[in-house]
Image 1 (spheres, rainbow, N blue to C red):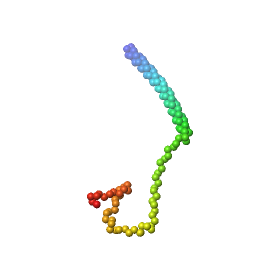
Image 2: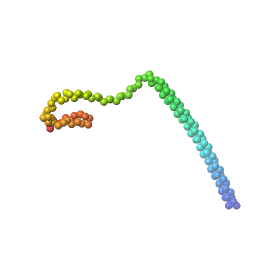
Image 3: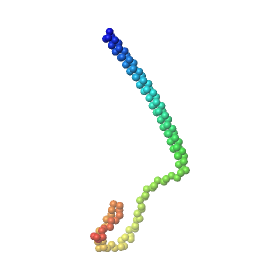
Image 4: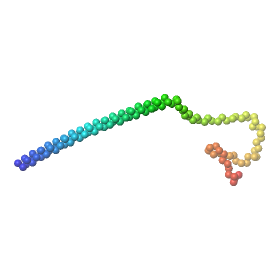
Length: 124
């Protein structure tokens, strides 16, 4: 009789635990459904706000494009064109005699920017 009571009680406990577990599962499912609905609602609101921002941005850009011709536009800086070198006629250069003994100093040294570098006075 005691064994029968204990088995009945164990069966009752098992049924009770299964019932509680089933209720918990149902509660979790309900809460999940509610969370999903809430997330969908928030996502819809975010999408609406984003669409409103896009429309506002588009309207602002359209308004700017109609106003642009009235404003002065910044001119793009032009690239410098190379300077034209003057060509000399060949007749005048042969009239002067070049003194070969005069050029004792070495030819000038140029840096990478094209400027002459003066030799030190100490050596010259």
